[in-house]
Image 1 (cartoon, rainbow, N blue to C red):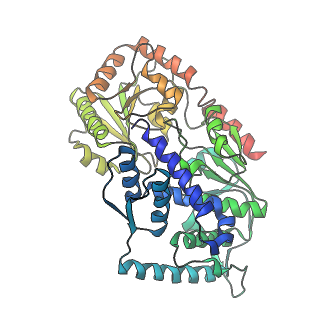
Image 2 (cartoon, rainbow, N blue to C red):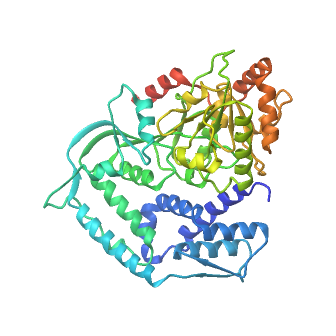
Image 3 (cartoon, rainbow, N blue to C red):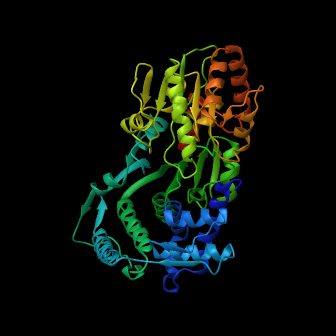
Length: 475
């Protein structure tokens, strides 16, 4: 089962493309033509969050098929049929089952969407000029925009702030064809509702550019679609890195004019699947090279959000490592994930009782650089911090026993100055941390080598990166 993650991403991408191109409802050809990219991003995201689909795909990859598979949504069932045909399991028993309560809920949702779109045709945000409008899909992104754009004339919106900015009139602002809605396909109606919402929000705004972060969501893609028609430039900032040697499905078929990447390595990956977007390397301004000979006497533990590619054994080993570090009086900084568990959840999950040597960094409020400059080494299981920390000389200890094909530069951490920085067990990680903690010269040598290796990933950082980024945004 070598590199299951690549198989899953590539399979999802292929079967969703085939579903949209060849199996989409014939009476919705106009919808397909208009929203192809947004439908693709929406459906790939749904498949990654569908337990029934993921179980089927995993069972196929392990050749341990069950007698029957039941799916919760008609489109997931239809896409799954494409998968089993692709894998030559045509006789597999799969079905779509809906409860009576689900019929009631979907009918109610259909009525709501139809009514909401009808009302939105009378809504808009009051006329105003905005040089740089920022769309935040998650609350934590507000702080990131503020850091990137400090000193520029910008305004941050999310869905909630757009909604509360609406003005309603008795005069219809535009017309939306309600005949394109479809009772049988909930996702089609949700996409069109969001389109109408964003169209109303942008209708009367005089905007120079709209900026996004990460960009792997259908809402950002819908806004970009509207901007293409209104001749408004759209630009997106990279957030996070490729950890393994595969591009996540949601980053394929993006819809932005420009995408600012950390370095050539990522531009190459993104551009392979996004021919219409210009990729520009500007580095990552929210990290900085660490001072040579600096000793913080602290170990960082960077947590990941819940992820189907992180198995339970990895979590158990991380728990053991934290307890070993506490037992041996190491100072620890635990950094949460912005979309992960809260501090209290982490305390309960890891059974932390002694807080004498433990601090918490909340990633929703505190930038990664604050953590990196406070530690000598970083422990993570699967995180963008691996490349980010390595690029500024903070040594990452990767605790993961999965069979991952890491991206090529992270793969090199398996042997750097005869040290294996990717380990599979808590005791190996603890011994490595203890060894490096007592050997400052070796740490310095590793740090210098990592900075050279990961220059390809992150070409600039700190103020130099910020200057380049702002210059590109302004021009």
